[in-house]
Amino acid sequence: ETGVTQSPTHLIKTRGQQVTLRCSSQSGHNTVSWYQQALGQGPQFIFQYYREEENGRGNFPPRFSGLQFPNYSSELNVNALELDDSALYLCASSLLTSGTDTQYFGPGTRLTVL
Amino acid sequence: DAKTTQPNSMESNEEEPVHLPCNHSTISGTDYIHWYRQLPSQGPEYVIHGLTSNVNNRMASLAIAEDRKSSTLILHRATLRDAAVYYCILRDVRNAGNMLTFGGGTRLMVKP
Image 1 (cartoon, rainbow over the protein chains, first blue to last red):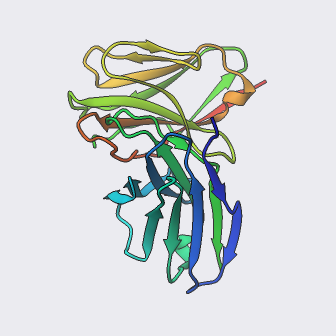
Image 2: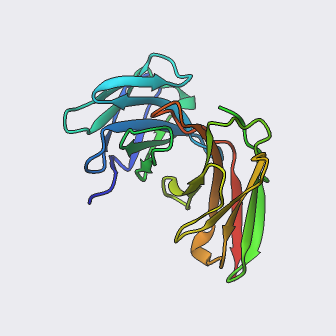
Image 3: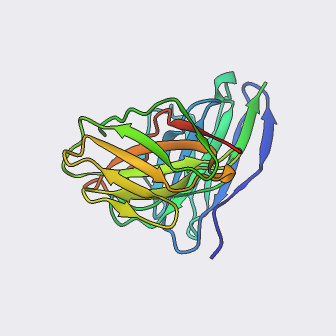
């Protein structure tokens, strides 16, 4: 059983640019969630995808968007990057069954916006 | 989701037990108590969860107060590898797939 992987590991962008982060879910999982973690804080929920449809969204603007593919891999896209978007972006996969489903996190992508 | 309150940091000696407290006075009857931890430079990982009864697994034990307004994560013998930020999270079992709402967590430091 393979774990959750994310790419790239690190990324540097400039303000106003667009970025795409990628996540490969754990085998057999049908749900992927994305989180943003600023330095020194707990992760904040961005959105969740279940069977390729958005299944919940946190308090993030529309310039944060996502996709989930039939093989359950996923992308997080951020347009018009701002300095405050600098953070660790985490994806987590799970098998959606109930509110007790365990989420398995990847190691994250560290995004720096200059 | 109901909120949780945890101490910002705690310190422990290696090979001693550690009790990490969590207060959740507004917990509802359908809220499960989950614990995740985040090791340095890694994503969070699941530790344990429970509803009413105490729970044990290979990583830790979870002791839940009778009124469910507080809980304690117990690491029976802390190792240096247990140094991490520990998050106590409430999840409503009725909301399948709902997100994890992380607070600030407790930073556990383990001294050799």
